Length: 158
Image (cartoon, rainbow, N blue to C red):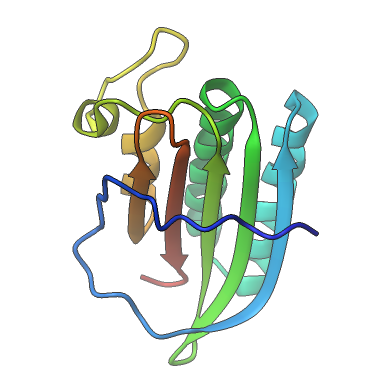
């Protein structure tokens, strides 16, 4: 497995507004996203992780949908990247943190990209904004020429 790159260069942040939870990392897997087949592999890996974490069928669907949107964005707009799946626990609650990174051109207007209906012409306009709504915590780090990193977390039963 490869390691993820440092995202200290982030120039834009869109958190959910909640304070970060202290949590223990139980498991980590990293998947490269370079082909359409890799997108399917990510979907299956995220689904398996939601099952291991004990997510309800509704929360499984939320996390898999968010992961699909974010991985597809990295593939299409970033020219590929990585999806890191972290299985977490805090206070007896299980969670999953998805870190999706690419080295693409970055997002010029993060407010527009997060708005409902925003599209670059190749999608339905549910991508980043939809993924943000499906997860409990959401961070967007990007900048022109710096690539994009999204860190999204969902906790079982929240």
